[in-house]
Image 1 (cartoon, protein in one colour):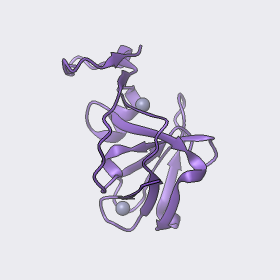
Image 2: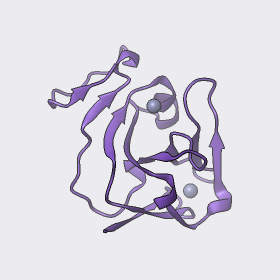
Image 3: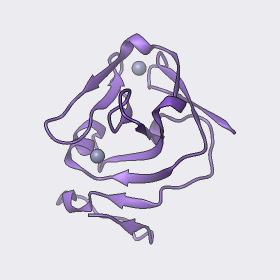
Image 4: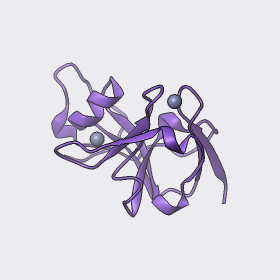
Length: 131
Ligand SMILES: [Zn+2]
Ligand SMILES: [Zn+2]
């Protein structure tokens, strides 16, 4: 199974994740907008146990919003790395923006489209929309 390398912006947090994802999609929820500074996050869903933190484990902070699952980021540079409750959850949403290795797979859906911002336009990409 191919292993992909991932990192945060400052490079102190490094991790590995298998390319065999359960699924992949964009999340347009209000929390992902806040933490991404844009329209949301792009994620690959993997089993949490398959993620290997190579370095910087002590820099990773986890924030639990009032609604939704915990989100984890590098406390030095602020890069968002994991969602969906890492490290306790069975599955983790790995932010595609954190993966450095090239990969062929593309997101399959747009999630939380009910949280679309007035300034946001969904691309006409034919992907499934999930409310
Ligand atoms: Zn960092
Ligand atoms: Zn989200």
